[in-house]
Length: 293
Image 1 (spheres, helix red, strand yellow):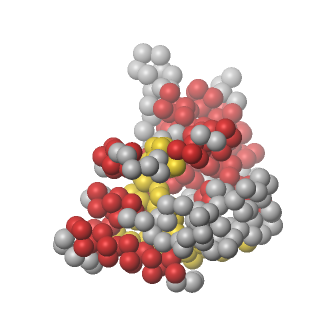
Image 2 (cartoon, one colour):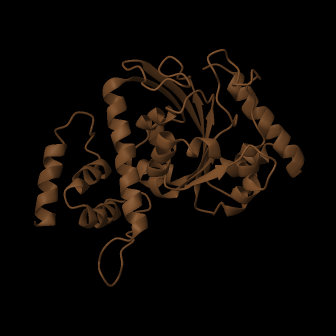
C-alpha cells in the first residue's frame, strides 16, 4: 500500500464526519488504524510539518520503525481523540474560558488543576481541548493517581492505556508523594485533582468529611519554574455518573470553567517564604472551589 496516497484519501473521507473540525491531528490519528507502525511515523511527521505541539518522531535509525514510546503515544492519542468525538455527539457542553480559548497557548501548559472532583468519568472534559493539545497530553502528561485506583482490573488498565505515564500514590505515610515530586521533569505536563479524593452525592467524601484542597497541589506548583496552569473548575458529574455506577447517562450537559494563569506570576502573588506561600495557595484554590460559576 502506498502510504502517501492512501492516507490523504482516508483523510478526505474523514473530513466528512461531523465534529472532526478539519483538525489534522485527529485525521492523522484516525488513519493510523490501517498501517499502524508506518502511520505512527506519519502522524508525528505530519504534526511537525503543520506546526503541531511537540511533534517529535521517535524512530529507530536502523530499522526506520517507531520505538515503543511513539506507539504508546499514538494509542493514547487515539483514545483521547475518540473520547472527544464521542462526547461531542452524546453530550451538551458549557465551558467558560478565561481568557478565551483561542488566546490560550496550550504548548506552554505545565499543570492542569481539577477542582470539584466528582467522578472517574472526568476524561469527558477532554472534549473541549484541541487535538494538538491531546497529542501533547498523550506524551507529556505525568499523573499522580491513587494506587487503589490503578489496581482496579478495568479502570486501572484503561487509565494506563489512555495516560501511559501514571505514578501510583499510596494513602499511607510513606515516601510515594515525595518520590513523585522528585521525578517531575521540566517539560512534564502534570494533572492533579486538588482535593485528593472524590466527592460523593451528599457533598462530602466517602468518609463523610468536607471536601478541601490538599497541600499536594501547592507542592507541585512550588516545583514548577515556568509555563502556565489551567485551573479547571468542574460543574460536577453526579448527574451523569456517581461513584460505583458503571454506565453513565447520556444527552446531559457537562460544565467547566477554565482559568489559565502564568505560574510564576501566580506564585509572586504570595509570600516569598515557601511555607507561607503553600498555605496561601491552598487558601486561594479553596476559595475558587467554593465559588460557583
